Length: 218
Image 1 (cartoon, rainbow, N blue to C red):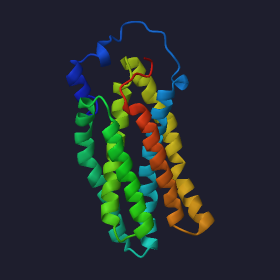
Image 2: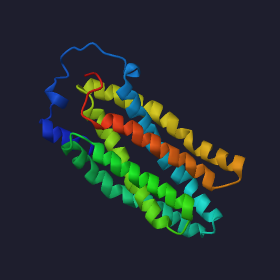
Image 3: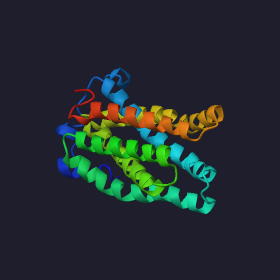
Image 4: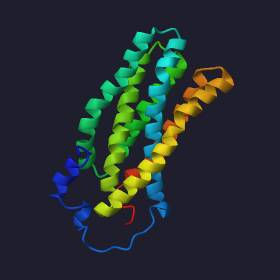
């Protein structure tokens, strides 16, 4: 509900761009929309990043010598950091027509956080997980708002939401098993983090294609 409030306040309860849901419209398949696919990939990758961190970060930190209790607290920093950004994010997103600066922030925080972990392991782990939480939290807020801001009617918003969440979460579910498989193949804990690095880059690229104002069926 929080993600919809800024848009509803701005449009006085109307659908985006003042269109009524009662007007008939010929549906175009979301699967044929490049913008819809970019939103879907973005949705999947931001979830993949979070799922991998929840599933594997405490394990990796313990393998690197951190106490199990402390590794659990380190993971909680990601979630604690996400909370404020997920409250503020939708308000900021609703006020900006061009989301390019937000993508710069998301891409920068995610890439830097993974670099800190790969390069310095536990030495800078607190700054790394704070950056990671900020990036994933804002990315989640952004993609939820795109369901509204990049569609013309509530019907289209529901359709892209269904596509992005069903296919996106299917993509995200592959993340933790693939992360573990990379460790099994290499015997190295740094290598799986390159998966998160690559996911962050692709997330940024696909997000930039959605950042400019535009409609999926426009």
